[in-house]
Length: 257
Image (cartoon, rainbow, N blue to C red; front, top):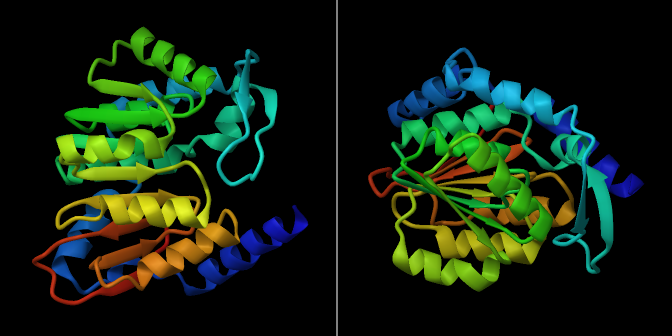
C-alpha cells in the first residue's frame, strides 16, 4: 500500500512540475477542445441538479455488499457505505463535469461507460449524450445505479450487468461510439485490451486513474506512444486519447486542470 501511495505521490509532483496552461497549445482543433472542455467556468444548469444528488449521496449511510475485483488477483466480498464508495470509486465533481463537457463537445450520439459504479457519473454522460451504454460488473452497484437513474427519470441509459470482456465485442459490432470512458479493472492487460478494442478514426477515449498503480501508468505510457492515436492529454487523474484522421502529427500534452 505504501508503495502504491508513493507511486501516486511521485507522479503527482511530476505532474505539478510539468503541466502547462492550455495557452501552450498551438493546434486550433485541440485549443478549441481545451477551451470548451477544460475551462471549469463553462458551467451548465444540469450541474446544480447533479451536485445536489452528489451531496445527498455524500451523506448516505446505506451499505452495499460488493466484491473487490479488477486490479486485485483475488475477490473479497465486503460492504461499504454509499458515501464511502462515492468518495473512493466515483469521479470527483470537476472530472464528472469534464466528462459532461467532452460529451457535449463531440455531440456524442452514443457514449460507452466501462464502470457504472453508483450511476452518478453516468447521469453526467446521460445529460450530455443522446444515448449511454454503461457496464457494471458488481451486482449491487448495478442495482443501485438503476434505481438512481429511475428515480431521476433518466431514460437514455442502457445499463448492462456483466464483466466488460463478455459484452464489449458485441457492443462494438452493433454500435458506433463517439466517446468512451474506461473506469474499471485497473490492470495493465485490461486497459490495453479495451484501448485496442475501442480505438477508431473518430472516437475520444477517457482513461480514468492513469496513475492509480504501476500497471495503469505502464498502460498509459504505452498508449501515449501508440502510433494509432493523434493527441493524448495527461490531466493526472485521467488521460484523454483523441483519434482524428484529419490530424497529421501526433502530439502529447500535460495540461493543468
